[in-house]
Length: 113
Image: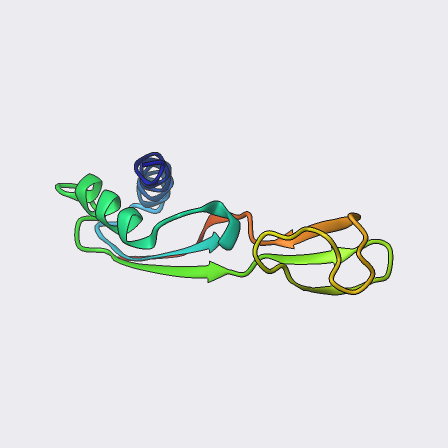
């Protein structure tokens, strides 16, 4: 259940930003979550909802956007979605594939009043 730890981290970011902005209410929290982060969206929403009770973010809408796992082959230049966590290039078979996206977990934006 690493979603609780993630929700706590997001909550700290939200409260810090709201405090620095003199916000009275957090309306929207948008998160970018990489496919490889292994986050169960429903669990993250549940954990965040439990943590947000009685805080400035209690009624905030949470928008979760999944970022696909994309790789780039340093051997042939292929770039595309990595299927089934197979990190060998589907074009040339090389193991020299860098991950371009799909590992992130970050706050994209916040809307506050």
